[in-house]
Image (cartoon, rainbow, N blue to C red; front, side, top):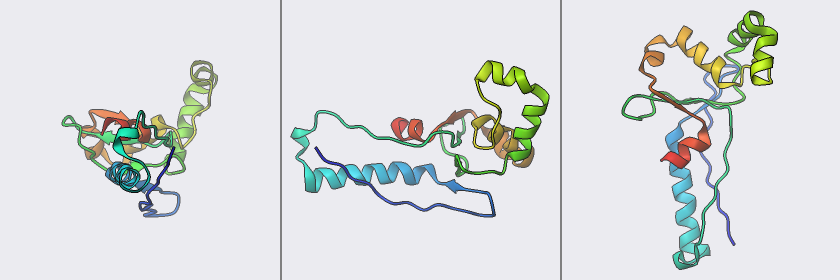
Length: 138
């Protein structure tokens, strides 16, 4: 019946690094819903709501389920060394189990990067989510 979208910033702190604040996603989702309900459609006409979102971006939360760093996005290449290491160490076995070779855009390589480069953040991780899961959760 209707659709809406909202913009939010993309952070590129250095070449190959792409991040966004997951709170921006949920705030934009809420704003889009408010736009629809105020201009496009009456609340009584709503029978369902759907949203789509990206995969393979890493959202990390602490024990209180609070976001503890900006999400590392799917197109971020900072974990290239970790992907190469996984492919070297596990090669065909990794492909046999997962159906894929390791790529920098995948969640596991990003987690390994955090363990190596942001140890204090890594040690706080209690939950991980993908962007669309985070929006649904919030």
